[in-house]
Amino acid sequence: MKHVRTLLVAVALAFVGCASSRHGAPTEAGRQTITQLSGDIEAQLIHGTAASAHSVGAGVVAAWGALPVVYDSLRIPIAVVDTMNMRLGSGSFHPSRIGGRRLSRYLDCGRGMTGANADTYRVTVSLVTWVSERSGGGTQVHTAIDASAKARDVNSYPVNCSSKGVLEREIAELTAAVLQTSR
Image (cartoon, rainbow, N blue to C red):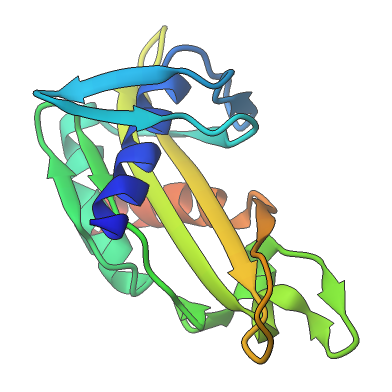
């Protein structure tokens, strides 16, 4: 149930993030509010989570079709597929690496005596990616990431992690690469 709630937060962020975004620029997810997602499911949005948008030179349907391949290549589990709104989400997961790379490449969770917390703490990540038509033509690939980290060896509160924008850019670049190879 905890995983479902985290995923719902990520999906809700995606809905808000779609509202306004520019090429490559992060967009604020908005103030805390309750959003009705579907049926009786509600999710609370987290203030300060940003979504990033990057353009790809392909149609929306083709870009959407490439996302499962991209998630698989990065070893990101897929928990939700929303074909109607062209959204793909991971749910809450605990990676030690993403795509074979250290988490500190993608996330800033602070630093400790042993280095980057993203590499030494237990990190919880939720992300959602969606595609939309870009005004004037083309497609934008949007990704919103929510992450926190908690020390493994002591009982402590989790710290919020911020995205460095690298994973969002890599998802868009990999989407473009997948589309190139399928032509």
